[in-house]
Structures are given as structure tokens and as C-alpha cells.
Amino acid sequence: MMAIHKEGYKILAFGFIALLVVNIIVNIIMADHALVKWAFMLCSMMFYIFLLFFFRWPARHLEPDHGLVYAPADGKVVVIEDTFEKEYFNDIRLQVSIFMSPFNVHSNRYPVSGRIKYVRCHPGNYMVAWHPKSSELNERSSIVIETKDGTEILIRQIAGALARRIVTYAKEDQDVLQGDELGFIKFGSRVDVFLPIGTEIEVPILQQVKANKSIIAKI
Image (cartoon, rainbow, N blue to C red; front, side, top):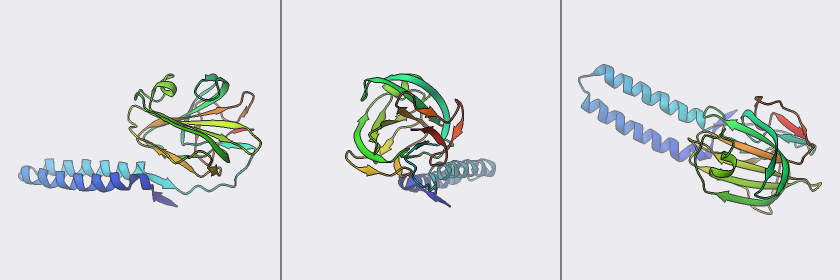
């Protein structure tokens, strides 16, 4: 089952009206140029179809499993490495990063169940999302979830060169369920997951993963 995500409603409505108005103007100005009018209309339709495709929201249900960490986003695993995480933990963590292209589903999901311990949104730059420094310098939101056994996992939503808005639904002291929506990032981005050292990783580098479907680690 496929639906349109609520974050796309305003953009799709505005986009439809804007494209309609522009096409009317082009038809008036280019009244004697049928080829130009049809070419512009075709490009407009293709652009709007892309917007519909970008804001698609597939239904993905899962049975929560305390021992598993699911991918929080669709995309490609671009980083698996030990990293010093200095915003919250101030120690070495195992970082798994997923790059989301404009063609991926951009709804983000909670990789584990637990209680939200920390939520921070940071303004920043808009470097390409695969840049090593994007995790620290780009606009980003950090969310820490504490599982029922006391394990803390940090998820970081990072804006990319095209992404201009990060939406985060998480609130501190909120109980969340694995697989529920964490937020949404618009037009290309990246999601980092910081796990305890020694966590058993279940995906190789460059693997394509899907939120709520792909298991990235065991805890």
C-alpha cells in the first residue's frame, strides 16, 4: 500500500498551482509555438510526478524485536567505522551511516524501541551528505534513544546539498516504538546511527537498505 506523506501536502499543492499558472502563461506567450508549449507541459508533468514519487509513503509494518537494530532510512550504507562522538557520548562509538538519494523514501523510522533521552536540532551548512564532515557541520538533528536494557543509541538526521529542511517528531521523555516515524528529510540527505562499540553489524559497506525491513545490527 502506498500513500503520500503529510510533509508533502503543502509542497504538492503549491507546486501544482505554480506549474498550472506557469503553463497558462507559456501557452499565452507561445500561442504560435505548439512544440514549445507541449515540451514545457511535458517537463512540468515529469517534475510533478517526481514530487509525487519523492513524497511517497509506503506502509511498512514490523513486529518490534528488542535484540535488533533496523535501518532508520532507505539508502546506501556509506560508513561503518569507529568514531569519536562528541555531541552526546564524548567517547568512541560504532557509526553506521546511510546516504539517501533524492530517489529514496525519505521518511525516517526509529531503529529501536525505548525512551527519548535527548533531542537537539543544530543549524549548519549544506555540504554534500557523503562528505565526512557533514555529520558535524551540516544542519542536523540528534536523537538519543535508551532501550529497556539501558543501551543508548544516537540517530542523527543530516541535511545534504539539496535537503533544506529536517523534520524531527521526537520529544524528550517520549516512549517510542521500533518502526514508528522519527521524522522526514526533504530532498537528499543522510542518517547516522551511533552504536556501542562491539555491536554486531549485519550489513556490509555499500549495501542498499530499507527502513523497517533491513536489519543493520544486533544488540
